[in-house]
Amino acid sequence: MLDTPRANRLHIAVFGKRNAGKSSIVNALTNQSISLVSDTPGTTTDPVFKSMELLPLGPVVIIDTAGLDDEGELGELRIQKTLEVMDRTDLALLVFTGENENLNMELQWYKELENRKVPMIGVINKIDVVDLDLNIYKKSFDIPFVKISANKRSNIAGLKEAIVENAPTDFEIPTIVGDLLKPKATVVLVAPQDIQAPKGRLILPQVQVIRDVLDNDCMALTVKDTELRDILGTLNKKPDLVITDSQVFKKVNEILPKDVPLTSFSILMARYKGNLQMFVEGARAIKNLRPGDKVLIGEACTHHALKGDIAREKLPLWLNAKVGGELNIEVKSGIDFPEDLSQYKLVIHCGSCMFTRKQLMSRLIRAEEQKVPMTNFGVAIAEINDILDRVVSMFPEL
Ligand SMILES: Nc1nc2c(ncn2[C@@H]2O[C@H](COP(=O)(O)OP(=O)(O)OP(=O)(O)O)[C@@H](O)[C@H]2O)c(=O)[nH]1
Ligand SMILES: [Mg+2]
Image (cartoon, protein in one colour):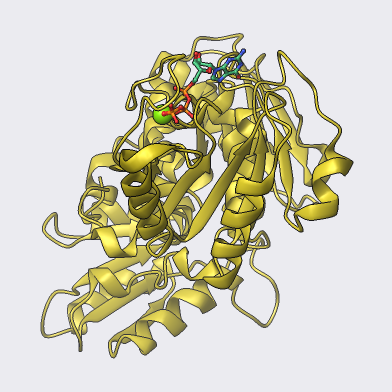
């Protein structure tokens, strides 16, 4: 994701008194030792900007700042620099600990950030040492609060969820396919209308992709898989992109010349709503599955399962064939999606067309925190058919 220009990245800055654990929080969020941590107040002197991929949220810049209770001349300069950071902040983490009851400084930054209309999250750190009564804070600070321990890595998932929840919405990817297409490009969409397809209409991802292709001044030509070969023959040039329903990946892959870029609705939606990089890594875990391993298949919504249901019939069949034996597959729909994923070797989620990005993110955060690989239907099907490399090759972030 390092191609994403810095300006388009969500800038998350961490503010708080010296020794509050700001640098420790940056390190806990990123799982890296980016910032120097020590028990000497004033360890961080200049703001530290770090562009990175914050899984599963996407590309961000995390800014660690110098503690704002600085004293003396050098302190003034640090305060100035930290205030400048506020002008570049899209989301602020205000860090509190029980170690210093005087909140005057925090109230001052709260006003500064409020003036700049920067959304904030109050982070109560070091709860392994002192657990604080939130009501004291809620009276003075009208912001959401999360309790964590950066050192013990507790509730980092809760902090990530709060970040997703409170990040300004314009940081969601603004287009589904637009960045892959030049104007006037020809895009062929393959949409089999089988028993699964709702009567009289197209499913939401197909409609969204068509709209996005049109918004980007391109042509969307929609065919069923059964007509694809004939219709390709009538075009006077190869299509610039083919997007298929992933259930017919194998067939479409065989029909299309190798130099035509091919992907699926489900992969595009994985990228739009989830985190494609994480899903691709998750799908690679299929190779390591052994008969008997527990796999969770998750669906966003509950629906009446029809014959040939992808989650209950097709996907289990293909997975078992791939691993050469019976996997222990569980299917969970709607709110039944479990909190504890640790028993599963892999989670495969549906395209989440009825979910917002935030809803899917909270599931991704859960999997990421519990170190359980997670992928989605389309990406998994591509891996099962040995065409994953082909169908993600056009994405600049991978
Ligand atoms: N017990 C406990 N200690 C913590 C926690 N988080 C950070 N600390 C400790 O608090 C001290 C300060 O941590 P830093 O991360 O350097 O704090 P900072 O806010 O970046 O400090 P400055 O850069 O000096 O402003 C270190 O000794 C950390 O190990 C926590 O969750 N629990
Ligand atoms: Mg620091």
